[in-house]
Image (cartoon, rainbow, N blue to C red):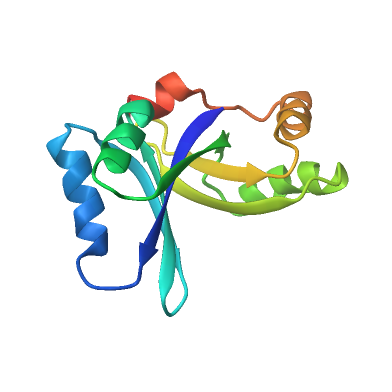
Length: 142
């Protein structure tokens, strides 16, 4: 499982750059990022190379941040590749709360970061169906 950092941000100019600056000054590298917003607030989701240090640095600077465990899996970057993998979870009755992806340079496969309701069950279903899971060592070292 991968540690994802979530930051609750007011939707105003300068809030996002403040988070990025805190992480940059602490020598923490961002590996993946997603932001979901409403008109007033947003949730910034980050995958970084040093999640424990990042959460401490953000909290020390007064930025509200939490850690969530997510699953990372490798999906062929071809039409239908994601649909096939997601169908395994749907058949097992496992709901996906959200997901986002990025392309891994060495393999050109998509890496999908996924938050699910029953994470241990989701991992078992994916392993049973030979879906390659991506560990934290690999994610943090991109």
